Image 1: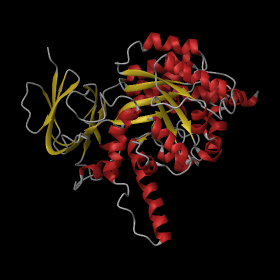
Image 2 (image 1 turned 135 degrees about the vertical axis):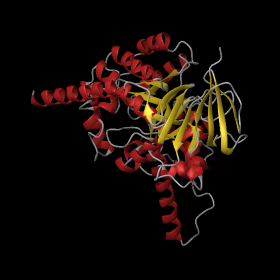
Image 3 (image 1 turned 45 degrees about the vertical axis):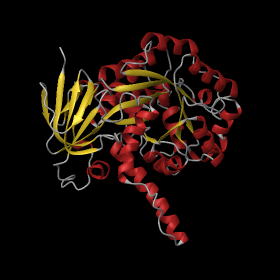
Image 4 (image 1 turned 30 degrees about the vertical axis):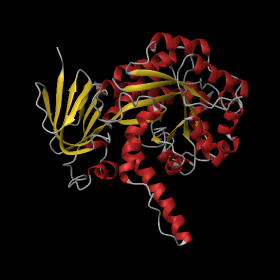
Length: 450
């Protein structure tokens, strides 16, 4: 029996150029797939009234260390240099599998609550073989669409960062691939979260890239974040090692050289930009328009909730404000008019949805409200005082709305948020992550006292 749902009468921003925007449109979902997007759909289906709602594809977060949900806001004033010491050398070695499970469950539910339906979980907390199992279990129980990116352990800053000699354990990566990701068609897929040149010796870099390609999984790596990593010339080093490819996502990219931007573009690589973190922690200016100028499709990501909020509204505004501030200042200084290519509010919504799906490797199944794609749909309450009255629906989402306005969230046809409330055991997730926080703080105190 076919399971049908109709989202009725919303202002639909499909992000599909063939469908466009429908000021009053319907979305028909059949067995988890979008069947039709048009006005006045007649079907024998459950009807969700979207009057006064803006209906969009779910947001896609292309880079988040979800395991850090247990230590939210523990480093509010941190720079990138502080992060390595305060998080990776202090808290990360203390994480048990139970802490990872609690954080991934709560962190994924946080995403769903904020309208993020797809997540790339950059999981560099695999301190034992039980850690990745726990991370994947948390993601799976939440019901989010996610790419689990298997990363290194983090038991010692000296061992795992800055010319590390330790490669990600190939046998365990193969185990995870076979046990959980035998198919690439599921709600959860797999990637490899690599540290890259400058952070690892070349033979480690080469081994990790070879492992990912052996297993036919994509690669995701931080590059050119801050002046130090910029000096590494990481993309150039990867090119010299013959490792560049279309299977690789480059995160941050704030200090890429022109030559390196061309290398990324020519190789078919993709880009993830975390604007709030980059501005706040000293990575550099978020290079969203630079990526566009090189023919790339930049996506947005949250990165770390230890220091920034975990929602996509923040990222859209941070990127929009930073880029326009930079261009305005340059034009003012040069006494020139601003260019016609100035970033627009509409582009930010595209970066957060369709581009995100492209970067996460799931554009064939999500990122736009296109018949045939899986039904990952979000409805934003446009009647709220911080959003109404609506003149430009895309601008209302990117510049006015916030998490409190996320009314409905659907992933793969399953309703995860209805009438502004998560359909999940939120109390249990909150209790688990609070217990994890208490356990980690106690372990930190005990370590300091020893």
